[in-house]
Length: 469
Image 1 (cartoon, rainbow, N blue to C red):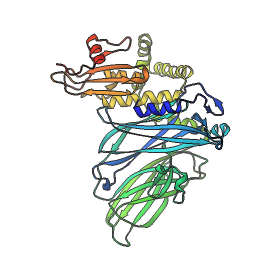
Image 2: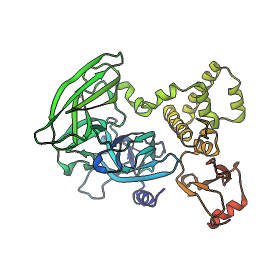
Image 3: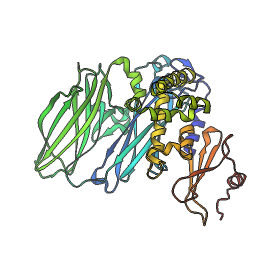
Image 4: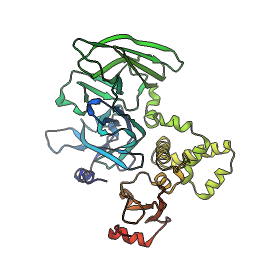
């Protein structure tokens, strides 16, 4: 945990009484975080793209404190938001964080379950393939939650007509008082309330699509053409905008289009945005889902990741729980038929749900995100999806992402090694070493009971003696 995060928590936790849903809370259940990423590879940014990490949380999960002034009857929650973007080697490439205050009139108002808090963080990123983790910390209660984005593709800026980043929004307006809103949600002159998961309720009536267009051929009084189509789950295509001419104000344009979805059936919709500029044409497809109001709460936890979970092979599903089971349990599972394995795993998740403070869906999503991450980062050459079997993959699957990573690529004649620190887990650490120079880092030392222990490494770490032959 960074120094700024620690200072933030110390400052807020000095008060011992806080309220959630109208009651003093003592449990440590995690926050439910929804997050998404939008990549804006505007040529004006030169060799980088701006990645915006959109997120939302439910206000009633936060802990609230009363104001310190008698004149103010409102109660307040302090929130830290942080994003880490991770490269293909598994190292944190960059990070950003922000602090903000959320208010409510009183504990009854704070308990309302239909109010969400929206925000976003931005990072300038070079072209490449990344993953990212968005973490939200409630300063009053110390509770936190995170959302893992397993693949973010950042392409280099193009030179021809290009439809850039996009996202869906609950609301969009050009008329606002900047002193009363979160200015981070202002983009291209619009105040946007983003929907990080692109999932809407069948009670929503109007939604908004935001997108950017780059490399327009600009000259005075020139225009480009826009059309928008949508295909439903039955394959039926509807023209929402047949053809619309928009005047150019430069080589880049931002568009916001309202889409009326009142009475639309539930299901997955694929939108196709088409742009024509003189002899240039570009198109882009966007997904959006409508669900029933009863499914909204579960969908926020599931998002589209649960579909990915449901579509996994039985082999992958067994791999997911390998480190969660005892040797005897794993042996029993592996001897079953595929149908028997399905029933065993179903019962496993039912029991996990009843024993854990988090929900079954959250458990599945977190374990699946770890499985995807290690297979993309730590798989051996020629052995796809083998990352979970490696030492680093096993530790990541069991303990999650490290809090701090010491990476030593070259120290004299000594082989490269990494130290993973888990400060939040009472200082647990793991040392991995690339002894053969093939990028397969093997576990050589840990202070965790039952793991490999090396007195020499323990001494080096305690004394900070890393410059050795």
